[in-house]
Length: 354
Image 1: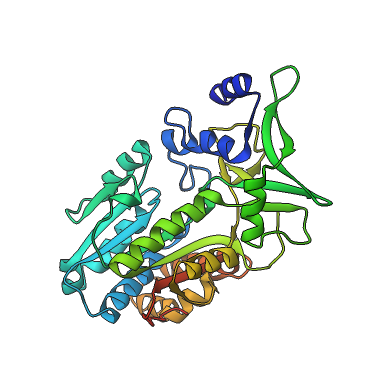
Image 2: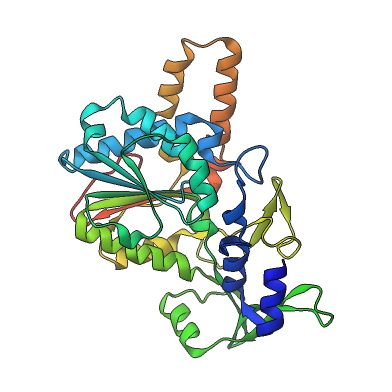
């Protein structure tokens, strides 16, 4: 909190995305840089923590994609924001059952938090895994980019439209310098042009502009175009054309006030999947239709796999597995709220899960 208060005292106001960046990623102060937010004892839970079947299905998908592109002697898997390392651990467990794939494999974990790298390293002990802090460090392929709740944790800009005028959302201090509040400032012409070019202006008066995420997508697309491969990403998001105010903060598995404890609570926004689809297509990739987590996992065969496993389980183990599976697949929970997007190099026609 002090870091943000001091920044605001010095600069008077900062754009929303800069505020989110400090709150989440500042080296000393940032939420992701100093704690483990994952699991029951943390602030939120992710699919790999709910059921290891999630990781197993993704591993099968990766092996099938590798086979589709001709079983290259080297394949690079890049996990974007690997959380506490659970997904990578589950992937490796399944990969080891596919000897030829495993022998061709290198994994890069894209992580900027030293705290989370320490947590990940305690879980993952495999010479095929190395850590990177920038996508620019990738210089070989084919490469599979895998993201689960990566993009929703990146800073966004918000623009407020009133009649024909555009105002960017900023963050400032109250008159007594004790509370943080929002402030709208006239948006600059360059920002207005960007949102117009992306066709983000609609009937709604709130426009979310995920500048950071779009920069990541452009770099990822360049790597796929250069080295071959694809990107598969799972996230909270929407496909409707209307703009929405999706900014939210979460602490101890409950929604929180975004200004109450910056640096101590998560800040996320939902992904505009139509926009992501458009950007990847614009960058010359073959983009599959957007699907839900429910449809994707079912098409890969998660229910059949669960039924096979259940035959060797006690009643209690079986009940636990299917309860967890329901959380992954239920349309009112992660099954419908989470969307899945896959893009591959032009000319490739892999479609498992879609």
